[in-house]
Image 1 (tube, rainbow, N blue to C red):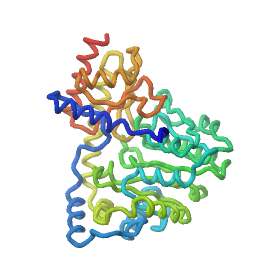
Image 2 (image 1 turned 90 degrees about the vertical axis):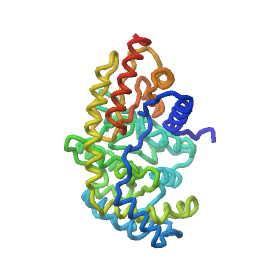
Image 3 (image 1 turned 120 degrees about the vertical axis):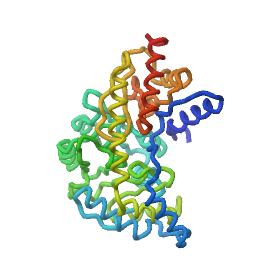
Image 4 (image 1 turned 180 degrees about the horizontal axis):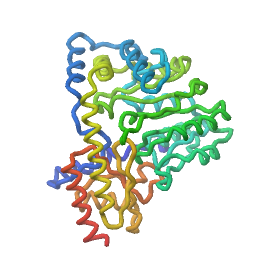
Length: 385
């Protein structure tokens, strides 16, 4: 249990809430969830399902209607054919990480994961007593992975490679040419599995289209794609995610689901069908709002003394460089929260290569973003310069 990590966003949220209860005003730029409500048609589909009796157990791999809808959506968005039998529906995205790593990793094996990256990657690898091998994402490379560096990290113990594009916390996106280059590397390592976390696949900017390694058909037999509904459809509390994987592997993941959670809530799954097959207007509205906020927060961060920030290509996070102040990221996280009233996350919450950075979620209103920037400027000018 000592190897099991956590997700710091929830810890900072708890500290921020405690300060608010004590009368402090806090700007929340720490938590990675859309501030929009779930689209009304999706909410109504969930309520309708409850009224119609979708209140019982369902099949462990997921309801046939949702598995078919996901197969159709993933096939269309990634340009591949996906069968419903390749889809496993789970309560949130994390179970796919958990089940896949349980199935593949053991002592003596290793897994390569992005760093800075979603903290649960490293947590689960270490929990299973496998070796966690960080793949640095560097600002100089616009926080995209370096395929040559990745290739140098693969050895005989490497069982799993974790990819995340668009990425949390950096907002980097893997270009199509790098995906093709990576595919050539992976062909040289036929026993290496790939877990491609694409939970932010719909949150892209400047006309970018999502690309996925799964389009390389000759690698499909060892790729697991992770996606879900939390980010795209503002459904974080519904707990609905899925994995797309080879049919023979899906059987084992479904059995892990049976042992762990039995199944995903049936009414939630029917809401997921409506999310995928219903109107997408609310998604487009949310993306336009995120794009405006992206520019506001990045421009504002770059205007702060001693701070620089790259413009993210995807997701809804700004990963800003605060290294000029001579303080650790953790110290700055605490100072901004307790003295400036701005909740953000230390870059080291996402791995050792995040030192010197702070992550800001711009899944918040323009007014709150600008107030947060104003508070940080005042604190920097009076206390850090």
